Image (cartoon, rainbow, N blue to C red; front, side, top):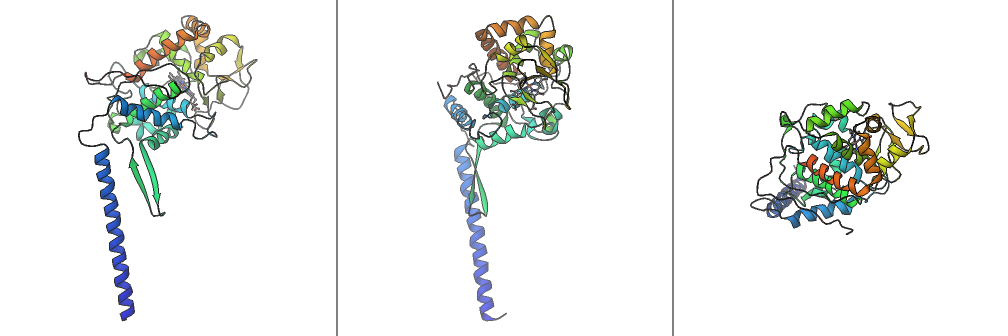
Amino acid sequence: MSATQFQNYLASSWAAVLYLAAIGAGGYYLCAKHALLGLGNFKPTKEDYQKVYNEIASRLEEDYHYDDGSYGPILVRLAWHASGTYDTETNTGGSNGATMRVCPESSHGANAGLDIARNFLEDVKTDSFPDNDLLIYEVAKFPWITYADLWILGGVAAIQEMEGPIVPFRPGRKDRDSTFSPPDGRLPDASQGAQHLRNIFHRMGFNDQEIVALSGAHSLGRCHPDRLGFEGPWTYTPSSFSNQYYVMLTSDFWKVRNWDGPRQFQGSSSQTLMMLPTDLALVQDEIMRPWVEKYANDSSLFFHDFSKVLLKLFELGVPFEKSTERWTFTPTQA
Ligand code: HEM
């Protein structure tokens, strides 16, 4: 090695050492920051949760190209699928655990597409900053909140921000590993009828009126052919919570859609709207139909009953500590 080569070698070694030291220091800084932000004895207050709520709310419409301009509906679906696996008999499943973070639950057929909602909420929890195209720093903004609480808070915020009722929230869910994942098949199959809905929802501890009230969440969002095969929205205002789902169910004539996809229904006058076989089952069943009619005629009754039953759904099987209270968060538009 010549003298010049040796000098270059020394210079590049020092550069490498300095570079590694900088990374180390950066890592130390971030760890220290995380510790300051969230670990230790930090006890989040209602105000801390309201900050997370506000962050979710501020991002719901950040991409107007996404679906109907809001991530709200898919956040509601995530919170429901996290909770709707509950089984009263074995006290398993439910929103405690956020076990859909990982396989096998993340790849259960019923959860197709929900990675979008999980990634949305990941970005709420953690900010990423590119640094000179070499490293990506991740800074946890809300390191103290569990995914299990975050997903439910996402559902609460989405409902409230899309002009729905106030839904109380109680923190205390823990994140658990895949050994706590519920078996596949606990969520409803949209191609079935009323008896299937009873099997699924009675297992969670709901009665027939509650099945009808919960189904009103289909006033929001739409079906995506690339997720579960079905296509289209249930209402004309899929980013706004309302009792329109029941109005459409009772006012239109629904016929089987003639298409190359799974069996679904198309309105005779509302041609662009759709209903799933399980939606139509509510008007075909003599016990559930009167509730569909009540909610179609009385929006306040629906809002009241929906808030109550959604709270029940979100708390199924969660072993809350006695000291925790239910909080209500102020909608950002209030
Ligand atoms: C009654 C049994 C139910 C069945 C069979 C069912 C089925 C479905 C299906 C097939 C989709 C379309 C998914 C996609 O293609 O993206 C969907 C979407 C949705 N479901 Fe349900 N669901 C049921 C109950 C519920 C409940 C109880 C809630 C909430 C409380 C809910 C909230 C939603 C929302 C908000 C969407 C729209 C998601 C989006 O726009 O991305 N569903 N549901």
